[in-house]
View 1 (cartoon, one colour):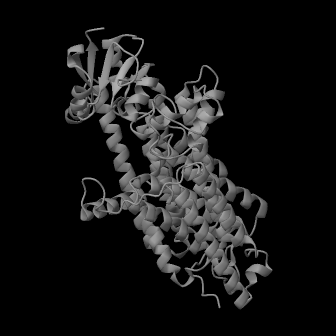
View 2 (cartoon, rainbow, N blue to C red; view 1 turned 90 degrees about the vertical axis):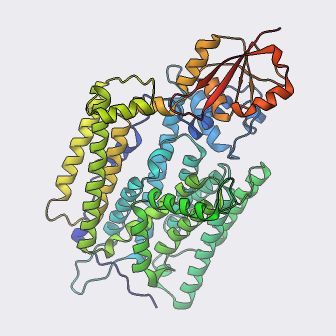
Length: 578
């Protein structure tokens, strides 16, 4: 027998969020940061480096199955994200910067993740057990309108998650994994309603995950989803539920379809040598203790998934009698698997990113059970948090431009030595428009008679978009200077000019990628490479250098530091004998 639903929603509460408003909000979140910057440290520039190397590769198709950067393999054993970036570079017109072409391609992946999440929640909310209580005299929300309102709320919750801002705008395998895991999520959720489209999404999602460095997560999600589908089929068979009779239940072959697609995808990854299992439990990571790891991971989860995680916990409590229902069990699975990966891998943030669509989904299902007082608390906290953050961004920008207030200006000068402020009228106009839009949104939300179900998440999503817009307009020159390798590469170019090649020893992937792209330098390994007039090495490799070459051949020319990082030095040597 079905447990009673805790959702109480009237028809006037599922008013449609205007599509143009939702599209503009997504665009305001996606587009800032596309222009006016280059690849940033560390994962962004490294991933772009592998894409650029593939785009200029001449070794035939086999080269595309073996991405490398001066002989170094990617830390994330993946293929598909690098293929996407390399193809974007190759098909881009000549006037378009390669890094911008890649950012546009990955922005479309984030847009695809938004779309897949919206439709996944829409179909989960269409299931009978997710529907709100039927009123005695009618007036409850209609199923389709209710599902659309829940999908709008979930998308707003996803936009509001703090952890999405930076990682969602990088060109890394993690963003590609987010795109593919959201399609797996959609495929499992929509399979009772859209068989062909759902199967295609499952294939795209499972194969994409397997070829993007996350075959284990794909396997766990696929097997777990198959188990959930099988359990629901057995439960329906025992109680002869109305789900199957109404055409909203899983077919008899659904579990086998999900499992088969997932297993084939993982086998493909294994065949391409992309399946590597490595568990790094808290306390077993280099230079850390178990308690310290657990504490840092807890802090990561709290801020990364804010504000979705409190709402997700509330959903699990209020829907606790329906934890086996499809609309709770599926997002719970897609949340727990990335959480487990966060605890057991060295890529904590990027693993947790994959759980954000599920966190947002569970957060949305908290809204039909909320009281007005709880919604008011969220509104006031969000208003104060994002308004305060926006005010700080504006004050520091004014200090950068004018020197007043003096203390913020001095802090910027100390943290970013050598930075020269610049004023952009276009950036200023966009920042002003975003601030005015935020003020209008606050005024709308604090108005009376706002009964829409998704209203509680409007301010969190709008505030996240506002702060990202301000950072990527007002602070973009400063952030680009602080997070880019261009100043360091330019300093090297001033010393060495345009040599035929530069020898390197123990350089990191990010330095190799930056030197190859920003400086257009030809790098050659010191051992077994060409005899180059200059040598760049990492400070940690000094002892190795003394062991493999005679120092009579080299003279230290200088230590070149990235201005905003005291721990990011390169040592430059000049050859003094032929």
